[in-house]
Image (cartoon, rainbow, N blue to C red):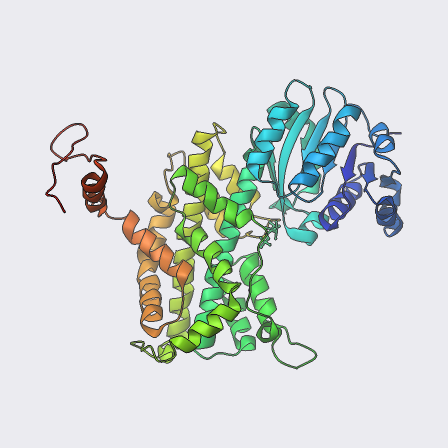
Length: 474
Ligand code: 6PG
């Protein structure tokens, strides 16, 4: 009998997804360039071996699949995906489905869709979130491609996906690059969320002078209320861990340089292209860049050692009042960050004609993915009231919370500024909020400047059409 699906690429994510699929009862063909790896996956998992079918050659792999074939590519994003498609294409027939389940740049996914047009082979760009454990036991899955193909994939992907209240965290989100685009924004939000948590950690460490194990308790406590989420949960776990070699908190022996593979950066680039202010995501990407220049920072610290701040860092207190203020500030900034992420998706949806189901996206992010939380259930509800949502900050679900919480965010950001504790993403959230909530901005001056030096024209409140002024010579 033939396999229901084939998985190419037995790296961590590929192998874990293949095991998950096999566990759900699907006959799963396996292929890896170094073939021994595919056999290893089967041999290391005797309980699932009956559903795992490694193949020696790509030809053998393709021949082992039920027609129409479903091939899931799980290789590194970029060139390896194009190479794999090149090798596969001559072996496939019209009606077959090729899925790229990696963290692809959605622009590549759109291009690959176009390249497949005319061949009758369907190309699906599929975002998968949840890391290794998610892939193995239930990730959040964001599917993009032909709608008709979704009906064929649904029976396999629904059992494989994470469940929230029994509802599978997988959906078809739109044509071509929609799935990978949404995954990219997921990661941009992930970066912002992580950065803001790290900023609060910085306040507790450098301001309140708290030790990591005590902070772990704070985050564990916050995880029982509004901030409850996977990222807050793992923050508590990371902070609670002790380094066996030194006996110190593990977080204190980890070098303060953050890595990044590109998806966060892409989310910001796309936001810029769409003209959406995604300042919290931008700050998070920038902060990773600054973090990676550690030696430079050490030099600059010396140069400004005597620069005076207005308040001592110890202005932050880890007493009940101080912690509540931080909790409220983080919650408020988080709402603003998610509103920005959703605004990017809303704009992209129009630009790319995807008609992205924003409420459904919140639903499939409630479990399985890295940013999973009950807060996403609130976002889903905000989109499902039947009212048109331009921006989450305009919805009654969030406007009340932001109105209340903004005072705490304001106090935290201003104290941090006066005490010299960096809070780039929290400050970005606050500034964006203040900018977005005022009817009259300051761009009139920018327009005046543009008209003066470049005759770029401006509009007047009291006249129609573009105006140009004859400015005095400067
Ligand atoms: C997920 C993660 C996952 C991975 C990213 C981000 O949703 O499961 O986002 O895709 O962790 O690659 O990694 P970087 O922080 O290295 O960019």
